[in-house]
Amino acid sequence: MQPVIQPLGAILYSPNQYVIPVYQRHYRWDVGQWDKLWDNLQELRQPHVTGKHFMGFLVLKPGLPQPGRNTAFHLVDGQQRLTTCSLLLIAIRNLARRNAFETLADEIHNYYLVHPPKRDMEHFRLFPKERDNEDYLTAVRGEQPVQGRMGRALRYFEGKLMETVQVTVEQELRGVFDLICRRLEFMCATLEHENAYNISRV
Image 1: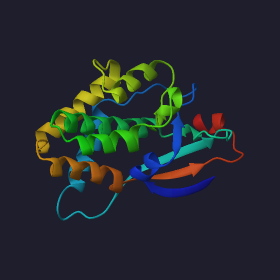
Image 2: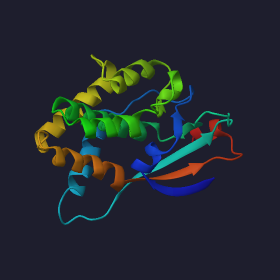
Image 3: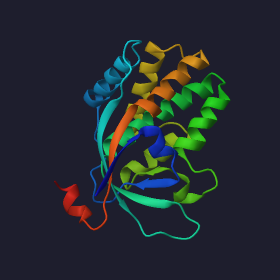
Image 4: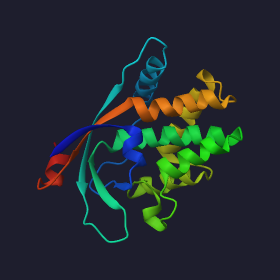
């Protein structure tokens, strides 16, 4: 492994794609985990708090490089955290669109959710597998309704943002976006020769 600490923004902004393998669990986080993440964000927003929040590990297995294609990494561990953070960014983008903050909405969408030049599967920076796929891609596209647990997560975060942030003030909404991208950190470990399936079962 080659561990390195990276903020969420650097992970998603990179020219990579994160694919959740078929052997991983489906998206399982619920209100308890969402509440904990939201409480951590609220603590980070306090004026006297200047540190960062450690989100845990992302364990990645690089796919085979292909000319003209972004590097695809299989997300061996950390899919619940990375998926939830992406859903939170979608919630911010949705509120930015509703309030006609197009620059902010386009920035989130084009640099943290999709790869604009790419098409089909390569278009999405995070690509869930199996039954989570349709719900997540529906959310990224901004279509309605978003079903399942991902839909509930999206509505949860949109509701929390409207309760605690002046979402009609662009600078307020951008402040939350910047905080999430800069102050949520992951320990990223890239596998070289390890057996990804065995690690994922630990």
